[in-house]
Structures are given as structure tokens and as C-alpha cells.
Length: 261
Length: 246
Image (cartoon, rainbow over all chains, first blue to last red; front, side):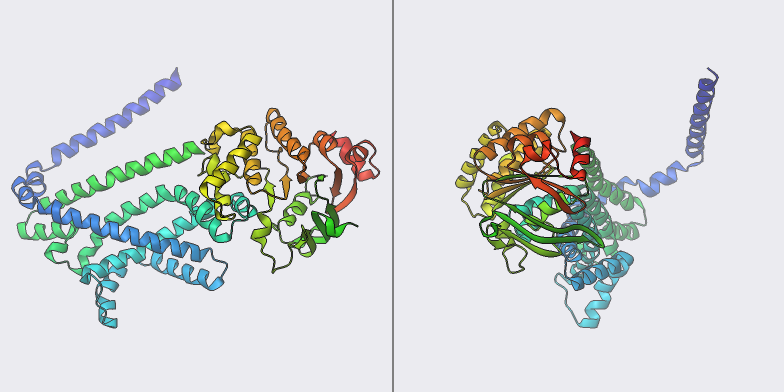
């Protein structure tokens, strides 16, 4: 009896703190300033429809190219890292450590400005192409580690069963190990996809032409031209519309794989 | 010795894991059509011996000759030899991403280069043999352990192997499921399949086995007719082991 009274009291205190904090926030916030600066309907209307047809579309296109490119490259790196040939392992390990250790922003600036000048290189798709290549390079390093872990999570007995049927090492990898590894890595790879969507915002540093702008660049330009922060809120809302279903999907896939085990 | 004619001929086989000598000079033969059961305490090297037969473990020294082919020779096409040796594992090792038919068809297509129709026909024939024709569309996760092991046997049989290796095929099964698997193995033996079986099922060894091999500490301690060895073991170590398991 006494223990339950104490528990109820504790719970009551926690709710009281919450109510007081919310009350203070409501009283102290300058609601008209917030509305004027972040939810200006005329500014928001002026963004339409380019914020979707140009900015959100470009965010999705850059993400898709970087993800597919990064995935192919990551698979190659993962197989190199598990190779019996030591130099392949060294190259893959060096690559992965290098690009996981560097901020993505540094790599994007490097490929957007430094590399084209240093090597007199015209990246496909111009500056934005170089930026997307930088995203491929960075995401491949992360996804390679994910895929390697997935491959190693396939039980050794699977390889033994396949080899004892006379299947070659290559057939075993492509028909038995990789299909199972990909099932294991789908949830973490979807997480990488969400991170990649957000990382496309870093492309704003290399300067994008009007038609190349993604959500962050687009909203920053709109913020400076309107002297109002509402475009940032609109961009944030669009990011969430893209990422939230994916994070829900990850949660669902993780629950499903846990059930299957 | 009948070395040349034997299905499996193991000569002075040694196997080290690091500094640990697991097989200390094994000489042993399996004749065509023979069912050889290998028993012994865990760590005696019996599974390692079986796994050396199809080179899942690489012997440190010595020779393993299967159907006249020296599998320890680095120039031997080991995939070709393995496709003729069926292997059944304690933990089944079915491919979980494929249904039962897919499990049976995969290696037939890839290794034997059979057409899809041919492979499916052969798969169904072997599923019927293990009594699971109605499960061809099921995924391994939805089968009982006993059913999974029978599918694993059918998968190995679908390669039309010259012989079958069994590595403790019933050790991971619930007791009431052991009988179905043993019945399938007994049928195979009756059909004249050459079999090497690492097992703890003394009843199976007595009833089906042509030869019983008792291993301990990496050597063959005693071998002979199963009924004879089980009834009158000559060596102390065999007696001690049998008194514990029987």
C-alpha cells in the first residue's frame, strides 16, 4: 500500500514538472514573432511549386544516384575486405577508415573544388556531379562495413553445405551467401539511406545553379531573398515527409527479422 | 588391403588445429555398398575424419582417396569430387532463402548443369523417397527439425552421389523425430548406398552398420562387425565408452 502511494506521488511530480514547463513555454514564447518569422503564409505560398518540383525532386534524385552508386561500390569494397588476397583487404580497409574518418563536408568540398582544379578534371554533371560523386564515395565506406558484417553474419554451415554440394566459391557467394546477407542488411541499409537524404543538404557548400538546387540550398536562397525564416520550416517539413516513412519502415523490418529468428 | 577398390581409402591421416593434433595417423577404408558407423566420445576426431573425406577440413598430412581420386592432391578438381559425395550435417544447413524445391534444384542446375525440368523431376523423386513430396513449396523455417534433415538428405541425393557422409544427423533432433530420419537412412542402406555415418545411435549401428569404428583421442581404437564390437568390446576404452552410452 505504502509503496504504491509513493509510486503514484512520484508519477504525479513528473507530470507536474511537465505541465509547468509547457505552461512557461506557452507564456514566455513570443507567438506573433514566431508566426511572422517561421510561418509567414505569403512567403510559404511563394515557394510553391518549385520547392517540390525542383528542390525536393533534386534531393531525391541526388540521394537515389548516391545510394545506388554507393551500394555497388560498397559491395565491391566488402568483398575486397573479405578477400583471401591481403592487398585487397589493405586497400579496402584503408579506404573505409579514410572516408569514415573524414567529415562528409570535407570530402564534398574536396571533390567540388579542390580535385577538379588540381587534376583539371571536368566532373560529369558539373559541380553538382562532383558533389554527388563525393556522396557516393562517403556512403560506400559506411555501407561496405554494413555489408561486410551482413556477409559474416551468414552461418559458416551455409558455405559448407553449398561447397559440399560441389558448388564453386563464386557460386556459393552469389547464390547462397549474398542473398542471405542482403536480407540481414536491409534494415541498416535503409538507415544509411535516411542519413544520405540528410547528407545531400551538405551540397549547398559547393554552390548549385538554380535548377540544381536541393531542399537546403533552395530554402537558404529563399530565406535570404525574403528576409524570412519560413522557407527553412517548409524544407524541414519536406525532409520529414521523405524520411519519416523510411524510419518507420526500418522499425517494421527490424521487428520482422527479429520475429523470423 | 583392398585400397584400390575401396570407395573411401584413408591413409596415415594427420590433422592439426594449431598445436592440437586431432587425428593421429588414421588408416581406414569404406568399401562400396558398405555402411560404416563411426562412434566415440566428443573430441575424439570422428567428425574431423568425416570432414577430411570431402576436404571441408584440409588434412595436415596423409592421403584420402575417394573412388580412386586423391582428394588431398592440390591438382584435384575438388568441386567435381564433392558433387559425387553427399553430405548431411548435424545442423541441417538448408538454405533458408529458398523453398524446399529451390534447395534441391540449386546445385543440380549450377554444378550438374541440368535443365530446370530435369532438376525438378530429380528433386521430386528424392522428396518422395524421404516422404516429403507435399512440402516442396515450404520454406525451411516452417519445417520441423526432422523434416529439415530429411530435406537435407534429399538435397544431397539429388546430386546422384556415389556415397553419403552423415555427421551426427540426429543429434540436433527432438527424440520423437529421430526415428523418421533413421528410417530414411535405413532405406538408403538397403538400396546399397555407400555410407559413412558419425553417430551416437548404437541401435542404428547394430541394425544397419556393416562396420563399426570406435575412435578416441584421434586414433581408431577398435573396428569390426558392429554386433561383435557392441557385444564384446576388446579394448578397455571401448568398454568404458559403451558402458556410459548404452
